[in-house]
Length: 270
Image 1: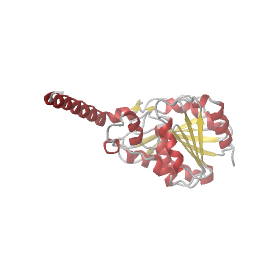
Image 2: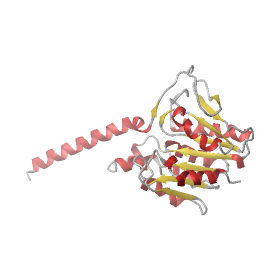
Image 3: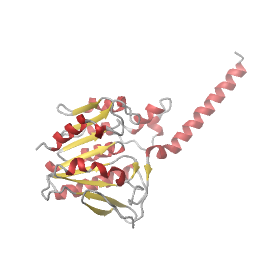
Image 4: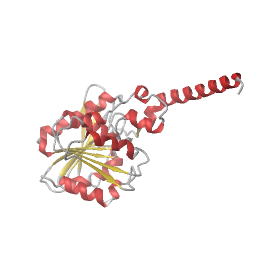
């Protein structure tokens, strides 16, 4: 081939590569987060008894949290629940019954820019706000009565909180190894570890957790590939569990008997 043609094609490839890379860098927040804001006057309606709580972090940042209550007045503890990357608490409230039916309160907060939670969203702030919720739970319940639960995006936040506090157990549903590693599943030709503004290294945090960890992941997950989550197996301790849901996707693990049976058994452990 003519050297000039080779050079021209090489230049085109470099331009395309660079253009896509720049777009990925500046649009990564839009890939990661899909919030839906709510006005402060918005009134929640849930089937489970609940209380709305606003946690003031500073002059600009307030965390909006819902406490879901079991029907029985006797409480076994609290599940601190970190939800996924879409909409707000309303999308995930339907899962509260998984825990309230076993006598647990569920404390579910929104991330900055989600629902009624205010302030600029950064990885550091997400950690700080999540840990503040755990500290509030610890002030009300003993560490042996607190379960840290993460779903999708929230699994990395849950892993951080679990590494920074003492609790009964951490349960992760459809987790990722880290954000850069997840991006690499979609765009492997780019230096994702350098390009990712959010790191959330769930693998590093889970390695520091010295109490039981249970992970659920589906083999047909099209959002967080099973192979990415499976890398977490190497940081698990003896006695920790990685439960594979055959044919499970990112959105339907709650429909599988294996998931429901195992979750029920975990919540019934003393």
